[in-house]
Structures are given as C-alpha cells and as structure tokens.
Image (cartoon, rainbow, N blue to C red; front, top):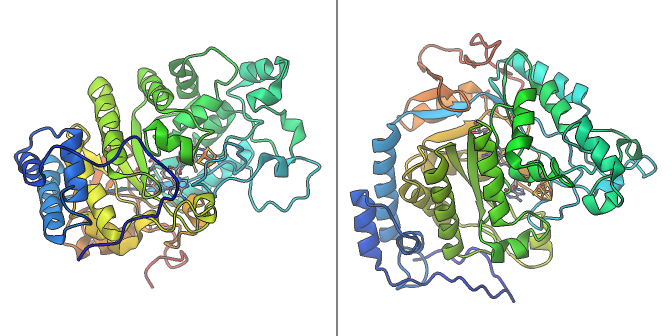
Length: 456
Ligand SMILES: C[S@@+](CC[C@H](N)C(=O)[O-])C[C@H]1O[C@@H](n2cnc3c(N)ncnc32)[C@H](O)[C@@H]1O
Ligand SMILES: Nc1c(NC[C@H](O)[C@H](O)[C@H](O)CO)[nH]c(=O)[nH]c1=O
Ligand SMILES: N[C@@H](Cc1ccc(O)cc1)C(=O)O
Ligand code: SF4
C-alpha cells in the first residue's frame, strides 16, 4: 500500500521529528477551507497522518486535490514558463556541500595544476558570448548560479581589500593570477550578462556571502552594487533545508538559516525580487520540511518580495551523501507530489509554485501541475547541476515542447517574464512556436530540430 521511506538515515539523530498533536482530518479540513496552516497541520498533510506508518494513498489523493483546487483559485489554469538560459560561470567551489556534485575543488583550477578536473570557469567575455547567442535565440532571462571561486570578488574595491588581508586563505581568497582562467568580479560578470536588457537572475544568498567576505558591508549594500551593475532579481537557492541541525549534516560549510534569511532580506531591501527554494529528499524528515516552509512563509509576510517557490527534489546518484552511505535514494513519487501539494497549501502568500522538469522529468512534472504547481520552469538551454549529480532529464525544452506538453493536459501554455509581470498566452494552433518576450524574440523557434529534446 505505501511507498518505502525516502532514504535510510543511519546514525543521525535529529531533535526535530515528525510527531504532532494534530489529526490528519482536521488539518485537511483547514486546508480545504483556506485556513492558514500550522507546522503541525503541514506535517499531518505531508505524512498523510502521523497516526499511521507510510503514505496512505486515499489520504494522499485528498491532499493533492485540495492543493489543485487552491492553485486554480489563486492563479487559475494557465501554465507558465520562462524562455531562459542557464549560464553557470564556474564549477570551482570549496564549500563542500555533501549533496552537490556540481563543484570541483578550486585547487584543480590553479595555473600549475594538471588541467583534468572536467569543470570550467568562464571569463566575463565568455559569459557575455553565451548570453548574446541565447538572446539571439529569443530568451528573456539569464539564470546564473555558480561555485564560490576563491578568486571572485564583488568589485575592484573588494578585491583591493581581499588582496590586503593578512590571511587571505582564511577568507577563501586567492588572486586571479593563481588560476588558469579568472572569473573576474561579480560586478563584471553581471555587466557582461546584461545583454540588450535581458533579465539577469543571479547571485544566490551563498554567492552574496562570498561577495562580502572580509568586509562589514550589509547584504543590502552588496545587492545594491550588483543591481547598479545590471542585476534584476536573485535566485533563492542555498536554502536547502532551513533547519540548522540538517544543514550541519548536508552542508556544514554553508551559511546558517539566519544568515540565509538575512541575505534574502538584503536583496529585497535593495529592491530586487527573489525566488525561494527547498532541496528535500535526503536526510531530513517531514518536520524539517514543514519548518522550512514556515520560515519561508514568515519571510514573505515580512517582505512580500518572493515571486515563486521551487521545490528541488534531491538527485542522489553521484553525490557524497550517497557515496558515504548517508542516503540510499531520493524522494519517492508520492513524496514529490505531496511536497508540491503541501507547499501550495502552506505558502498562502506566494502565488507561483514551480515544478522542475530537470529534477522530475516530463511525466512527473506534468502530474504535479495537477497537485498545486502552476509554473513549469524554463527552457534552460544548458544544465550542469543535476546532470553532474546523475540526473538524466536533459538540458533543454523548446517552446514547442512546452506547447505540446501543456496542451496535452488540457491547459493553456503562457510564456512569462521572470517576475510574472509580462505574459504571452500561446495559441497552440498558431505554430511554429518560439519565444516572444526576449529583447530579440520574434516567435522564431529556438533550436528547432537540433536540440536533443525537441520534437522530431
Ligand atoms: C549548485 S548551487 C550553485 C549556487 C551556489 N553555489 C549556491 O550554493 O547557492 C545551487 C543549488 O543547486 C541545488 N543542488 C545542488 N546539488 C543538487 C542535487 N544533487 N540535487 C538537487 N539539487 C541540488 C542546491 O539547492 C543548491 O543550493
Ligand atoms: N527549478 C530549476 C531552475 N529554475 C530556474 C528557472 O528556470 C527560472 O530561472 C526561474 O523560474 C526564475 O524565473 N533551474 C535549474 O537549473 N534547475 C531547476 O531545477
Ligand atoms: N530555481 C532557482 C534557480 C536554480 C538554479 C539551479 C538549480 O539546480 C536549481 C534552482 C531560481 O529560479 O531561483
Ligand atoms: S551547492 Fe553551491 S556552495 Fe555548495 S558545493 Fe555546490 S556549488 Fe558549492
């Protein structure tokens, strides 16, 4: 009847466990009535009741249905997506997150090291060229998240400070000359990616932390400088699970929960919209997942600046967590569906809920569009993070792919801008289909016929 548990977690004892005084039926009634849910309510829904082991299929369907209704009430039936490029600048990173296989040790990029690390660093000029090519294809957004390369500084002033530091190693700084290729500064990268007014979505809280290391600048100040250089919004990754006892296991080198919240508030204080994420399906339990949702909901109550929430299902295959035996799988289908549904029901102050074809594949993401999700991510054109972790769902979806998939489930595909302010509803019968919202978009299909996942 029920799915097996997501992951065996040996030897980790957590203070927070999925136990509550609430009953599943009460929590479901509140969810159906649109009453704001407590953490205990969320745990009851996510577990389909803590009174029984495993996931109860009938109760699960009831939760998915409530979330689907809520989605229709809040955002209607349109399914949105963004025409975008993922441009990762560098894989060099020494933060050591145990769920991540995107990173390569920075020492492998040093000028005197053998060039066999399999990773990459792009100069600002190389980033610009990648964006120019994609803007020609019609994209409206470049999404850029990267490793914390030790040679990165915010700008020339920051570099000067880092160069003068008594112990630069302690600040995770090494000068660009130490490396075969320099990523330049964050400001140079953002300027380089600002091609013809394309929307630049970049600088996660962890990257902002790196961009202020060794200084007493506030996050707002750092994000303001980046905004002046052309940054338009920030991705809320690095959230993982916003409960420190979990972060200590999966990403001990990363900022803690408070610092993540501080960075997000700084971005919003600088006038930038942000997204928020959760990465689940590893060592955490349902109590952690819902505590995370509560922290995101509180942040949105304080700021109102979060445009979308993105549940990222952990891809386990080629990661240190799996290699060290800390996990033996990711989330099950039922857990993925419930994560989407409970995110919709719990986050009553965030309109848009994204499903990721990169993490779920097409079939499961389509299913989640009837479990609470309304946004179907973006065209990406390139994807490294999931691929390097062992994910196998490709790197690109064309506008034609989106039209086919979304119309197949009886919904209307709508191309959106990053912040959902501009929308272009697509008439499925009026093909061929290409992006419309980018600075050079004219409806020409993006990579028709040549892309690995395009229709043939
Ligand atoms: C790879 S990092 C790059 C940006 C920056 N270094 C940071 O940590 O914010 C972006 C996000 O990818 C997600 N990620 C990394 N490895 C993953 C995996 N194996 N499965 C699912 N998501 C993953 C994490 O949520 C992480 O915060
Ligand atoms: N969900 C994932 C994303 N999301 C990025 C979006 O495509 C877009 O940038 C955002 O909606 C802002 O408009 N990117 C990935 O590489 N992998 C994902 O799983
Ligand atoms: N979805 C995130 C960005 C992201 C980037 C890479 C990922 O692997 C996951 C998420 C955002 O739009 O803010
Ligand atoms: S998740 Fe980000 S910070 Fe952590 S190791 Fe990967 S690239 Fe580095």
